[in-house]
Length: 315
Image (tube, rainbow, N blue to C red; front, side, top):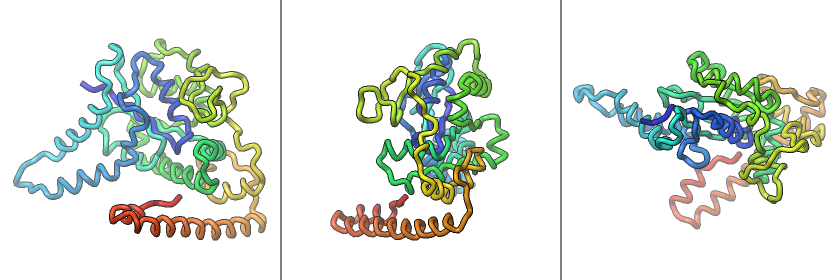
């Protein structure tokens, strides 16, 4: 018998999914799923649901097959894959994670049991962390946050999801700054016994995967590093220029405001519009050139490479 799944979904990589994943697993009734890393089940749920639809639409009603039995069989296959086995004897839940909110709106269609916890993070901080971790362009990092924000917008504005009692949206900043309060909210949401949870350990949990607090490692490390007073994951963007804020606000300001995050240099003077129109034009040509180069290079690599090149998405 599989354990009840808890799906942690992040707005984008660097949003704190691993942090929350480790905190929930501090409860003795929770254990990590057996999948190592991120599962990306919900991210690919559009293909999963398309498969179900394509298969079942070819079934004749005369055959008297039960579509819901088939749907449940597919779901159980995924849950059995995640199931860590017996694990700790008391563990009732298994925790898994995906650092992307894309297609998270499909959660109730895909899974008839379990819970989904969505975690957002202030866009400016996430963008800065994303650039440092993945050596990403600023424009690409902002666009990634915006896509995740749009997906979470869809979740938050879906009454069926939000009234299901199975979906919770939290902020990374609240989890870090008001850890006991937010973890209490999460435990209540999951109907877990709070008396069994180590709130002190949760509030002082080791740093894992920070883009700046790496201990002796030159790269981002997933080994626990004891937290010191020098660690502060908030305000990473404090060195940004006015024009960087201008660009961020133009691209992602709508969702930042919707999620209750502050915008800086939220100006609407003429230079704001001129600057962003010029950058948008430049970025369009930059991305077009990148796509063209990928397609041209694919011609020397065979038919499958060409197909993939034409389907690839340029951030």
